[in-house]
Image 1 (cartoon, rainbow, N blue to C red):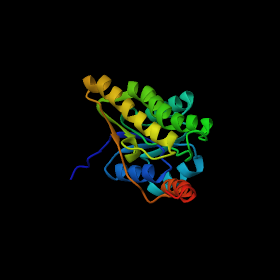
Image 2: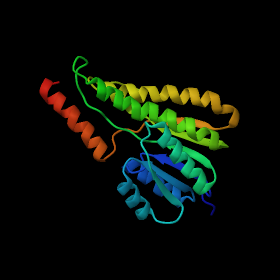
Image 3: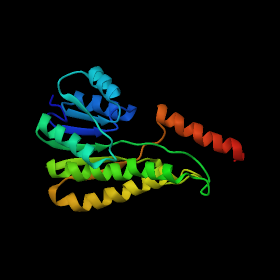
Image 4: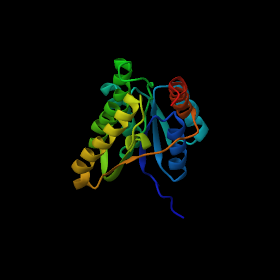
Amino acid sequence: MSKQMQNKVCVITGGAGSIGAASAKLLQHEGAKVMLVDLSEPALKKIAADIGGGEVAWCAADVTKSDQVKNAIGATVARFGKIDVLFSNAGNFGTVAPIADYPEDVFDSVLAVHVRGAFLCAKHAVPHMNDGGSIVITSSVAGVTGDPGVYGYITAKHAQVGLMRVLAKELAGRNIRVNTVHPGPVDNAFQLNVEQKLGAVIGRDGT
């Protein structure tokens, strides 16, 4: 039986996180060549070793930095010769606070990772993508709803949907599909951080 992703080249940002690592493992199982991108070099090394095989590579990069994203994309093309799939999955949460108290630097940092990061990844990857490829951006159920005090994360997740729609229109002529995915709670450290911060606010306010 042929594998669904045989010889496809996939770039995964947030590759050291649970969703990124699980996606890399599945894609590699289905025959893909995978480039993992994340901030943590030790975590990337461990995940690549855990998955095993010469078709999983890694490159440490900050997705908010254009030169680092360009380098990661360049490393992918140098290693595998092309790009078929971009999975823009890097993310951070920020904090939970009333609008008057929400830290501006935290708001900026959350939008930088989710929105600027996804924009830069597309900007540098698209010129190297094969026609008929795919871009997937990890949004969230937070991208279609709202919660009190979650200003950075929810705003960023809504913004990713707008970015997806613009990219989809532009790349339709090349048959490159662009989608957001909107997962709910996942049992990982990221979700625990979210729940602890939301719980602290709910406990304080009694609502």
